[in-house]
Image 1 (spheres, one colour):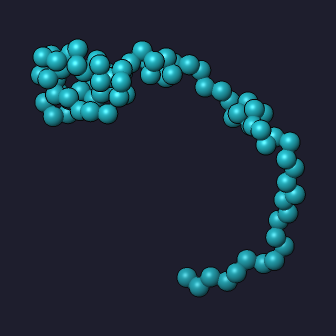
Image 2 (cartoon, helix red, strand yellow):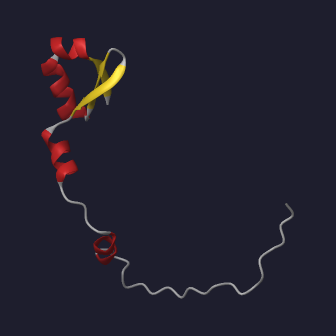
Length: 82
């Protein structure tokens, strides 16, 4: 990621686009403050694809068939002096 001033982007747009394609998102600042990002079509497509649910994520896991035997400890909590 690189940071570009808006004046640089106006003068070197082709270079900024090339950097976005090859190196990733490029930050553009306007008067020293963050303004916009220039990203490649590939990065934009990744952002726009729907996210899967946490349930689907775990169902796809190669470890889904492992059964853990989890037991809660029965001892008392330790004393803490405040």
